Length: 157
Figure 1: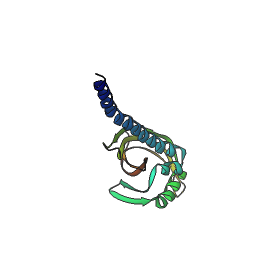
Figure 2: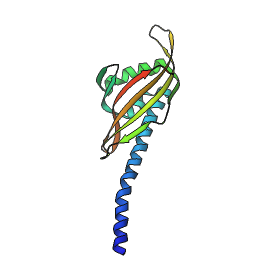
Figure 3: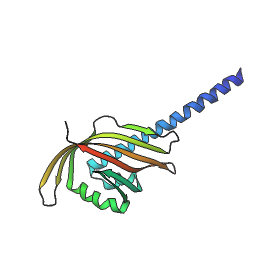
Figure 4: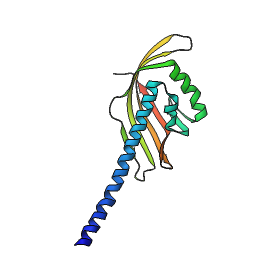
């Protein structure tokens, strides 16, 4: 009887531990997504880039681009310096998925964005848009890093 209980205990532990690990990974990916949103609101390029791999891809407007950290940073600094967000938030809780082996994950989000930006000619332009995007992550040496995004936008309803 004792051997059966011990075997049952080990079996239950074997079944539950992956769920714990998966849950922690889900929480981590949710936190990284929240960091990206907060970085936009705060104008914090460093926080935004801290969640990313050195080279990432971005797919939007029918174009896929591979960009190094040094290629991304100047454009983001200019973008965030000229832009003020009144709203930058999830419309619904993002959907998070982690691969069965725990090495890959994604966050699917629908984000409402409102604010204003100073154009190069000095004019102020108000904007209101809803983005849907997917953030792709890879676990490297035990750390989740964003490796790419695919995004599109629409006018709010």
